[in-house]
Image (cartoon, rainbow, N blue to C red; front, side):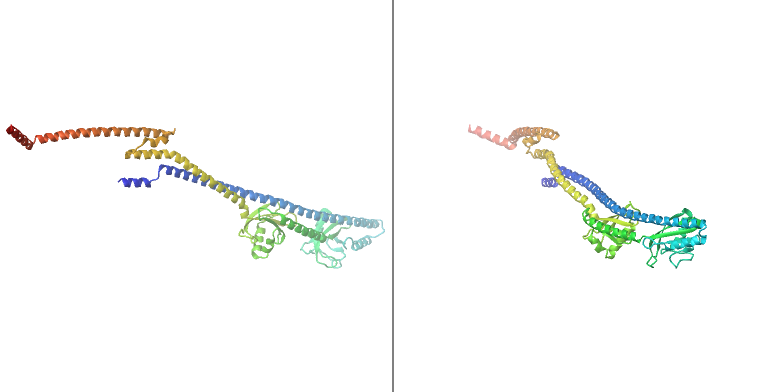
Length: 468
């Protein structure tokens, strides 16, 4: 029975270990909960900061690109405005010449037919600029003075330019509503070359109800714009090649047809030769904003990735003006998450160190608290076994807390119990001696009072009397 009790006690956790285990569990749970919350919060915050940083870089580069676009648009607008003003300036002497012919008619020097004939001959013969000319229509849109014999004398109300625009009708609407104005159309040159963009100036000469117009080709302006665009593309490609953000991030520009205009990554050019690369560019263009000043963020599976980080975040914005380019900043999701992940790992390592230190301190504190309790427990067992020594509780009794009070009380109580047992044993021993003496007397009396003893006594007496 004593062996079974001993085994049961050994198999049961002591109070010291239970307190230590409780402290450890509480520390682990607290550390895990706080660390997970902090790690998630920090990762989200740093990831958001990374995305905002990418957005700031994107906005800065977009402003740079937009400035270049604005310079091109400004060049086009200013050059075109000069061309338009030049048409108005060229038309001014024509009006003066027509007024002089009308004056000659009014003076009787010329008939109306003669004045108009000379006017139409003048208008047809005038050349300026790059072999540019004047044309004259009546208000029924019949060409009454046109240097191209294919149109002279024909009604051109249904004539369309290369884009299907009824530009002659549009010209009449302009002069009838405003007196003069400009229109854009595409027309072939007198030498039969391919139709080119042209800006026309038309005005109404009211005295004769004539619509007179002229125009200049502006394909040279577009050619210069294209040259500037090509230069900007090369400059941006070089600039993008030196821009680095979020590790492997880069910029590139793509037009609406899917052609790469400028790129900061040589891997993109190779990727564009694959079906996967073209598919990604198509999806980027499909999500790109139509209006400038707007940014759209999306996640794509990037075929240009040089490692396993195929999930990339791309941010797109559209340039202003007629170029309609799409600026794209691309960075892998892994790089965006890297700062938060690294800091999270550092935080987890720090939390582990703090946890280990906390566990060590907790065990030491718990041992300091529970060791006196263990001493009292052992003293109680010793008291039960009869081997109690009050000196075993001297260390615990020196404590000034409740445990010390308990140790001192138990020490006093144990001492009293031991002393009481000692006195009790002494009394028992004395009682045992008295009981033994009384027993001997009773046995002697029993022997002396027995018949056998009485017969022996009588026989002894008889023998003694006979000797006498």
